[in-house]
Image 1 (cartoon, rainbow, N blue to C red):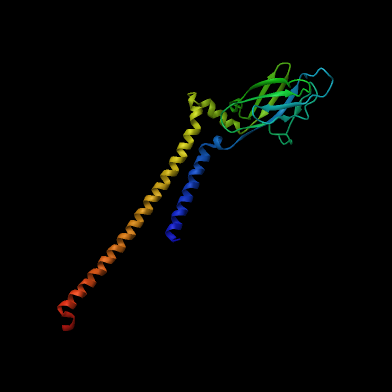
Image 2 (cartoon, helix red, strand yellow):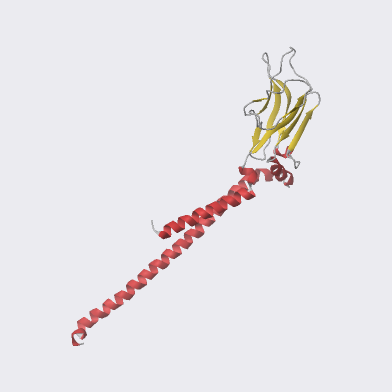
Length: 227
């Protein structure tokens, strides 16, 4: 492979990296997941008639259940570091909400429900990245999601409802357009350099041919032998 080809590949790679970097800077919420952990919780009741330790878990629709092995006693405040083996509770990869809730295992019938709600990144509007949910007579829970703060800001600043649905498409269109434009410009530059090179070769060939034709004419006229 020639040096020119190596340079063109290097330029394309550098341009692709630059465009990707700009994309990550301006659209971080779309690419990076926002992790949600449980910061604290207190339950005010259990749903079992028998005097047994409850099994409390958190779950979002379509996702696995996350058991809370420490939450056993009523009216006891539990605090967590976010580093527990069962953390995190869930992740947000877009502005879309999830149907989530706290539940209690039941061996004889359907699991009991503490509460179900639409859990959204926009719930974490505070600068501390916390969201508190209080259900009277059931539980108090505080969730932590620092990465949700920019997502919540994007959601709250949207002037029209359809902007949420179009944000991802707009970002993809911008990225693809930038890549196509970069490759096109580099391709035109490479084609122009190739055309210049071929033109120089053709000019040199015509110049040499003129000398050869002049020598042939002198030979035909016998000028070469006279000189």
